[in-house]
Length: 283
Image (cartoon, rainbow, N blue to C red; front, side, top):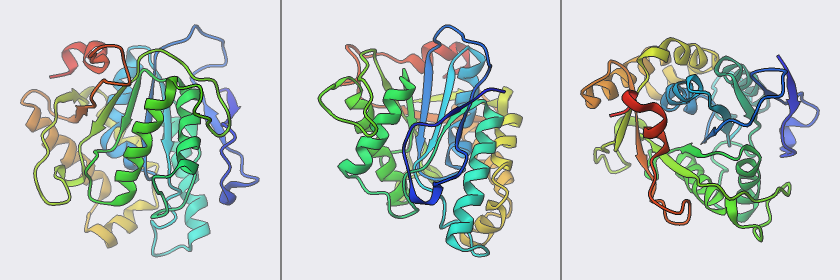
């Protein structure tokens, strides 16, 4: 498979590491519509968004994959730097399984703040990927990294067509419509325990096994999630969560739920490209 360097988004932990894109082919192909997943930690995408990405890929979409945080906090067995490198490698392998372009993280866990420094870097990723769809966390979720990742993703998407907002590294603005979709929060409720209802449900049953394989790439998380959150098996937990969302859909065995962000500032009119692209695999 072909390889290309990631955007110049340096983080001190990654100096000298071989960071790369994973591309579908070595051949030059006409531009396809793209979807960009902007989430907080390694394995977040696999839990709540990978199935939707794979369904879009089956319709010819290009996939772009970014975890903003290193995941350095996700171990009680390894020190921070070792955990960072381990989880970077796991994220790269998950992206390879999904067939997605991989972008490196920009900060450590619990250090992701909504500020212009990080916003310029995320905006550069958006302009590199040129997505028609951005997938990100729920605005209200169980921890601040998720909520701040959401805010950064939304504003970076908003700035996609604002040339005078300077991103880091600099990239040209683009002017086609962008639609943001928010994933279901962890536990399917907000931080005050109020249930969250999805606007639409994507059928992930046909791609569930590959979604599971991508999550299984995060080998280090089995012990961490057992210890920190009582997840007996993170793979079984994902299966059960996907099945629960499928039941909520009323139509699918496994599903991912999404809420569509207000279109103002992102597109010229109200559009729903996820529903348009996936047809009968959306309710």
